[in-house]
Image 1 (cartoon, rainbow, N blue to C red):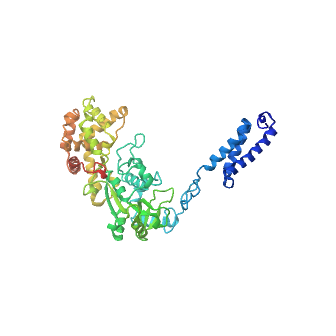
Image 2 (cartoon, helix red, strand yellow):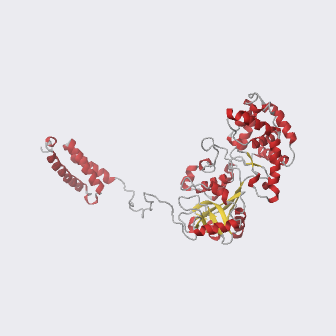
Image 3 (tube, helix red, strand yellow):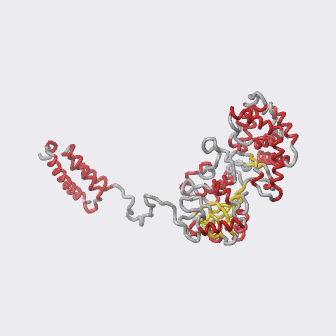
Length: 487
């Protein structure tokens, strides 16, 4: 009877009734046989339930409190070991981490000792590769994206055009573009093996000279390291075990930023910059870290030298090509079908050329690029020869027409997706390689293109002929223009 009329009683009486409900809950859990193991959270929750019941329906308080306590008590406790499963694997703290102390024998690049090594290596010519790589050094997007972060750094350092938009109107390599060979979800979960990494690299249309330690030697690795760091025309990347360097974690990829022959130290530009800073490490220790077996393959790791696809005498080439990622297919489609919609659309030669240049797809625009002569050393007389070829290209009637088109129509129609020189070289080489009837493709501009081809002389002629030969070879074999793992 008291419970029946509790809702009409004073607040003091209801508080007393609430205490009675807690004692009632003690009797309930005793009946369930769980009173000795009742979690504190369950007792608090049943107390809240009984208080709520007292203010609403006093007759339901006992059943509500019992239900709340029983449900909470039977909920799995993931933070405690379940019977028979042994010790629970430790988990990171909820607050996470901010970097890790760099263990010896590694030496942080920014430390006094690291600065001294860097100055000595620079003076000895062992850090020529450093500047381009540090300009493009990327922090990996995911904890398991060290392989992709390393590859993105190398591709951007080599100034490889991805042939795809990143954000807005900008073409720039990011991890999400490396979505071939292995799915990004799988990489985020398990990372990459050395073979998978080299496969993805080759699919970007670059030259990949990869070698496992089982097929190499310490002496050969040392020679490769010294040669790669003395030049900025390639990027050396290593796949190694962190454990062998006393660091936390295991398999890892990183680009190399320099080599100090005096102390035999190598500069590792760690892409996991949230964990460890760029640091110098003994060359022999890095070799041992690469020799450690990968538990997922049972094979040792290795190193790879990445470079642009170039002719045999690449140091003298003004023009270079980047195949892969369906760039060649995009160029073929552009000349065979897309330009047909532009024919006669312009009122003059300059407008037709500018409309054609503006219509160039991203993948096609990334196929051919011109190198700046000033970026090369004076070895073998490369810059003077390249400067001569570039001057010849700029003096062609086609380049002059493109320059006039830019001045007349860029402000109204918009800018070009590639340089004027690169597009002129592409038109000159493709017209011969694809055996195009330019009168049909670009009727107003065809006479200027024909006149420019007849005016080409060495050394520019050698450059254009090499591009023609490569395009014809790729058309015949479709080589290096598809995913390497499907070739």
